[in-house]
Amino acid sequence: MESRQPIVSRRTFAKGLAAASAALSVGRAPRITRAQEPTTVTFWQFSTNDFEIQAYNDAIAAFSADNPDVTVNMEIVPWPEQQQKLITGLTTGALPDVSMLGNNVVAQFQALDALAPLTAYFDAWSEEIGRDITEDIWPGDELYYKLDDEWWGSPVAEETRSLYYRKDLFEAAGIAAPPATWEETREAAKKLTSGDVHGLGIPGGIEYATLQVFMSVYLGYGAKFLNDEGMCGFDSPEFRDALTYYTNLYLEDKVSPPDTPTYGGPQLEELFRNGRLAMLVTGPWLYMALQEAEVDWLDSVGIAEIPAGPAGQFGFLGGWPLVLWKNSQHKDAAFRWIRFATDPDGYLPQLAAASGLLPGRKSIVDVEPWNTAPLDVFAKQLGFAYPYQYPAPEIPQMGALEVDAVQTAVQSVMLGQATVDEA
Image (tube, rainbow, N blue to C red):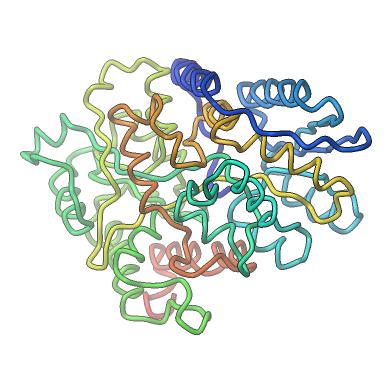
């Protein structure tokens, strides 16, 4: 998952969990096919968030009650360690049966022939419930998890980045509404930059946030990460225009803070909390953190959809699925756990609520806090949130290219180390 762990508001978590529990009470219990012998399914869970660990423990207990012949053994592997632990496990043969997995590396492990396809399981699940379970998956996730005509992940949680803005600063600057386009964003940021307040905070460091914001610009300008031949698509007028626009927000317009070339998400969010930014593109956790802190200016915070470029409107899609590892000796039992945990009529609402992010199915997004302003913007935006390489499917090399190609290009231009053409 290409984002830092969210700061979860206890108030928001409690509301989401209550809504999820209500959904469970009316949900349809899945039909269970019993294994012949008791089995142990090893599950690697990457969150160290207490709420999330408890939610998974609750789900495992409920699963065990319905599936006494299967024991789910959850092991905590923190997100920062997951890539190395998985690579080591791949080398030594010590991979789990099931794990979470960052959406940006599903293609990497699928290309290494380390994952088991889920398509046949999804087909059986769909036949049993009388509807296609994959039609409930967000459109951007198909580019992450459906590769070579097979499904490789069952989504759990989603996130996207929208435009935060200070209503009071907008009013003082005579701006009637949040910007709908990137050009309107630039013009508004100029008017809002005054004294120690900058109009717009954009990340420019070697950080995932840099690409997670910039991708909405380059896709909006019609640029593609990959061209029609599947090669690097950055050598195009559209990408040059997008990179020029983005870096000039710092270099020429000076609407972003002086340390922008080194900033990631946390530094910019701190500036927003301190009243030093009028606009910022980030995820729902910032609003939850402001709620938790009970700031007295919360009513002045607005959230708008990501601005559009000349070629359209594109949000970033982050999140993670559960995957089935090919080395599992208990694939059927392991998928029973995957299905239980990712069933929109089962435990998925609770697990998504515990993560502080949005649920991985369209049918269960109409719950608090995602159906209430201002956080409902994030739910609406999932309909046009995509991976970096939209409209192409994810590729195995994406993890390296994110840093080597895009983040370094943005930072090098901002630091004056390269021109747009050179970058």
